[in-house]
Amino acid sequence: MIRLIDKQQIILLSIRDGKSQRAINRLTGISRSVIRKYLNEYNTQRQELLINNNIDKTEIINSIVEKPKYNASNRKKVKLTDEIVDKIQGYLDENNKRKLAGLHKQCRKKIDIYEELVKKKYDIGYTTVCICINKLENKAKEAFIRGNYTPGDICEFDWGVVKIWIKDKLITLKMAAFCTAYGNFRFGKLYVNEKTESFMDSHTTFFSYIEGNHSIMVYDNMKTAVKSFVGPNEKEPTDDLLKMSMYYDFKYRFCNTYAGNEKGHVERTVEFLRRKAFSSKIRFNSLDEANLHLLKICEKLNNKPQKAKDGKSPFCLLEEEKKFMAPNLPAFDCAIVKSFRVNKYSTINVDTCFYSVPDHLVKKMIFTKIYVNKIIMFYEEQKIAEHKKLLGFSKWSIQLEHYLNTFKKKPGAVQNSLALHQANIKIKNLYNLYYTEKSRDFIELILFMKNNNITINKVEKAIDELSNIAPANINTETIKALCNRKTHIKYSIGNNSSTENAIYNKSRYILSMYSGLLKDFKNNDEYEVTNYE
Image (cartoon, rainbow, N blue to C red; front, top):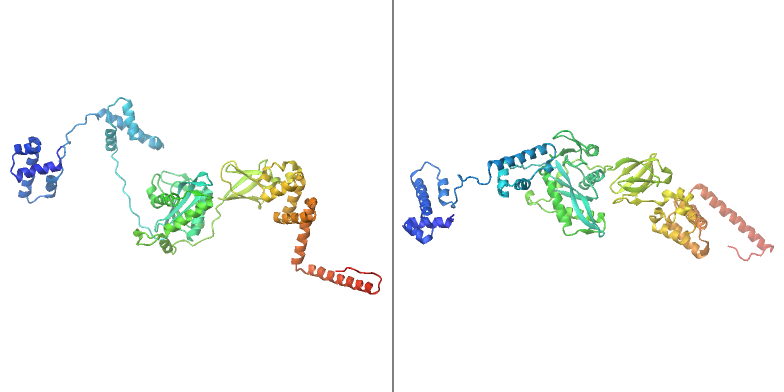
């Protein structure tokens, strides 16, 4: 194959310098048959340009100056025989059957088909197999239609994965990402999972942040949004999505399967926020700190001008959208409601973690509201307990006051109990200093504090006072007496009721009368008063 510069040299030596084919052969080393071929082509094409004025000459001009190439139109395939083509077509037909059966992830790829042919001793190359498969499938490339969006119309949602270090532990988190179609306003928040409570909380947080919501929310086929598939294109939404849709007055739309381009704004947002927020900083002390960092990055990006939007920032475009958005509503109660039976340890099991309730409810069914970061329990419409939601598996959240009735019967169980281990550090210090051998008295003190709303700080002050007066007499009874006395004095001074005023005035009157009697006795020298206050 000669180069384009060789073709140019042949033509110039022949036309300009008048060299013969033999002379050109001697000068260039190119065979005379090749020289003859390109000179004949050039002369024929040039003659057509000069004589025929009624044809489009662009193609002839391009043919004159094009790079030399082999004519492979009549070349036969040596290794790609009809037998191999039939084998490849059989594999493709089998792939189609698997797709119809829902086994699209178990179809053979091109490399798998090539390896199958090699196993069967066919002498064929991988590139040849790929070319044959492309020709047999003859797939047309997908065309995309650019959308035109109106203010307040569409917002897209998706989940993404983020891995960061929290307190020297690498954890995998889920990032809820939102992006408005009109202005590319982005928002993200991290969660420990993609469960329904996280899905609902992310929406209420986002709607409160932008002070409103859009008319249509776009989702893919996530389990928290799609309850079931009615047909190939029809999806039934989950009950929680229906509730949010009714409350916030928005419609929803689901993408087709494997069609991420139908929510391209948020598909790009997941990768964009993850890279901008967590590529340079990946270590945090808590999940709240990581979320605060992510929010600052979102605010920075949303205040950046966009060339495609005439220099307007996403924040400015969101302000334009607010005129067309639904009004800002109080945050939706995004709790998952379930009922649990209390086990023998007076706990319920939520997502493999255990949370305590008052011990008189063992074997009872209680009503539970599960939020992203807390769990609230009810029994007979009365709130009985609240816990911070635990992260991880098989963890326990135990509150000491839930087991007081049991500890009264089994005081020996206090010292090694998980309830004491998880109690307030001041409570544990109180037990270790004064009650290691008096567990029953310790439980009596905790009951006294619970029934009378006495804080541990007040008990500590009473102990400090007793330490100065009678350090050997620090026990439950003296602490209770001191706390009651102080409570009574505080109550009497601060109470302005008519009853307390009457008692106070009567007491002053009695004291004044008593003072008068003492004066009379002193004047009569019947008694000697040496000290009177």
